[in-house]
Length: 107
Image (cartoon, rainbow, N blue to C red; front, top):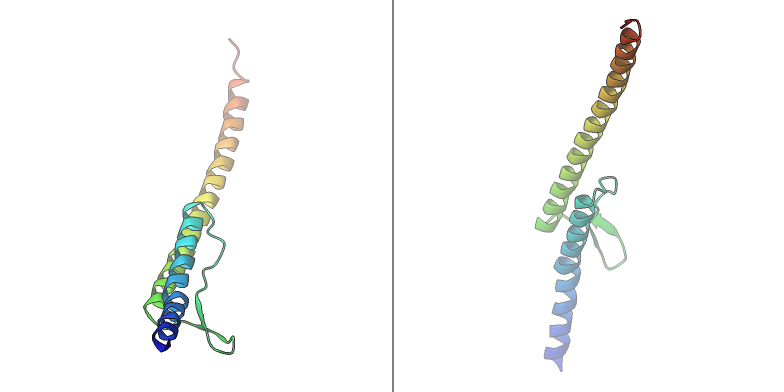
């Protein structure tokens, strides 16, 4: 009986400390792949009294790397979109000038 209780405790600890955080990382990676770069990634360890604290182990380091990657991708995408809007604006202005210049010509 003690062996069964010990095995169940080990399964519970493993599930809470390894499997769930990896599932959260996987879900976050899928969201990022789908284009959601706005949702921050947070993996914390819950203590016995529901106190949430940042993980300071390998899973926490991996989560920090994912979050840094998400932020950098978001910055890059935001910059690219801003540059595209600027180019669209410049292109629209150039097309209007070009159309105005050709209307002055008589064939």
